[in-house]
Length: 125
Image (tube, rainbow, N blue to C red; front, side, top):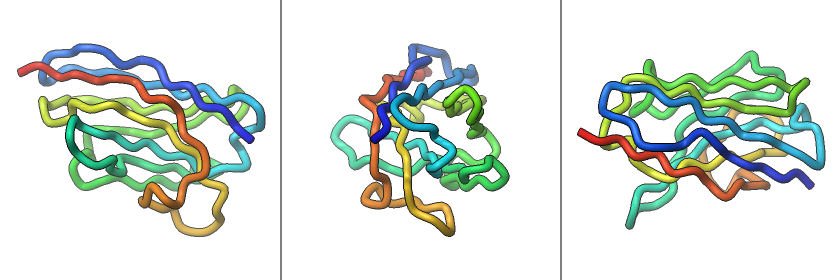
């Protein structure tokens, strides 16, 4: 089992940047594809980005493509989400998740096995 803890959220003005971190413990994350999801108030949790086990392949939601970058450091058991050109509609709780599955990077919540508690990102206009 793996435990995930997100950090790095906060309040930022539109156009600004934030870097989210996800610290894993319990098992090495090299066993998992990793993803970021977000959930705005009153809305469902949505896929943001995913990265494969080796860090050589990534996938993004259309809404963040070109602005967000997911990365990982397996030696440090860390996953990151660099968010640039932030918009008010990016406001949400951001969750880190781990997927034991093999094959193509997945975008469904049901595909991920472990979740963090989330970190709040608020973008003011």
